[in-house]
Image (cartoon, rainbow, N blue to C red):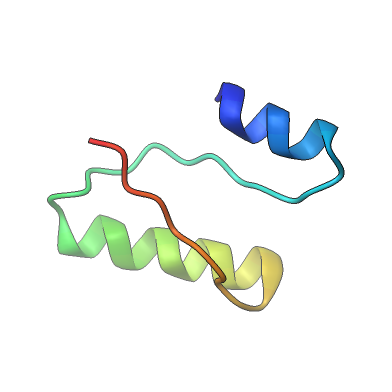
Length: 48
């Protein structure tokens, strides 16, 4: 969550959502959530 806060402090936009990177369904849900929030996805980082 620190990365999200660092991005926001510097004026950027970021979301944080716990997701199982091994689950196709959860990753699709994360992408849908990001698209709903921002309208597009520039970068997704999966930190396992």
